[in-house]
Image (tube, rainbow over all chains, first blue to last red; front, side, top):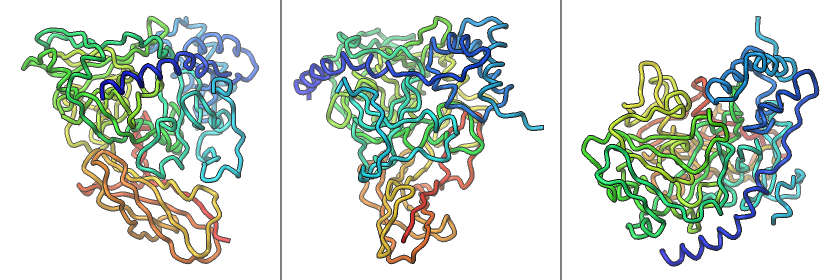
Length: 102
Length: 396
């Protein structure tokens, strides 16, 4: 196995050296225009494309979106202050949420 | 190849045998962004998110028990995915307060250890999350966040023994080369209890289906934990620590947990268990129809239903198939086993049928008698969805 694997790994390294950036440089989903869209993209897209937002719509409530944004701040370390959390949460609630059940 | 990276393929009915369908059960937002794409090293995968990359296999891929490397699903939590070039000179450290002597192992050192082979399913804990009604937040996976491959490499126990394991060892901690961008983001770190770490089927894979691991499946070395969910299968493995302590990690203590007692397990992960929740570990029994595909027109004279069933290592004893949405069931024919952790192929010949619409389902029973859930066992992470799905076909 040893010699064969070393040769195969050398070939793979050549093939994949160019590959990773091409793979990951895909067009992110566009966010819906509206108040807060720019700040939402600016903060969220540091770590992930907007696919993550659109993918999780439309089934979360505004409160659940706020919980998600708070998780990004507290658990994942996104450097957002209270005002930014509020602005992004409001944008998500207005554009990607369902109404809360009574 | 590179020029075609990320090119979107139009759904085309002329693609014989290839699923062109984005499941209707997915959330509307997911359906609006999900695309079948070719990406370098991978062929026609369902893109859910581009960065971090999350790609599912189309369901027709599971007509075989071995999933080709270029159809094997891709799942990352953190966006700093290493390039293959960054893995040049790769080595693996084995350290921690429960080893006799820390060691740094090169690829050649691992190749000097005896090689083990295991054929095993790797399945994301959140596979089929997107098909749950009501929907649960997270990556909205279809059926395709899984695959089954032939994995080869040294046993983890032999790697650990190169450093010498002390009696008081409690857990083995793992970390890979994929890293967070932000300082405040918890690095992806996971642990195993000693018993699972020392299991001879737990290996450090250097090859997958007799080829080097694809970059996006963990090149150059990945932890293989047969029977356990994919979250423990650390990609781009760079660091192993044998510890007298439990690992305190967001990815162990907060994420990937389920309510205690909700799902069956053979061996509880005691050091990571608390009063109310347990880490999600062992797979639950499951099955999937890989053909025919949703919406297919099938022959009046009859057709063959095929698919795969799998569990956490007991093996599959029975698969039943229904043509009427679960009202009546018949036993499918099981093909030979290629390994206790692998997919088991099944098939059923329908015989002649009247024109109409047929709702195909399958369900498996393991050798221990474990059955699939009839309704989703609701849990906050949307894990372990093994509720039988429906494939609707038409006889005209």
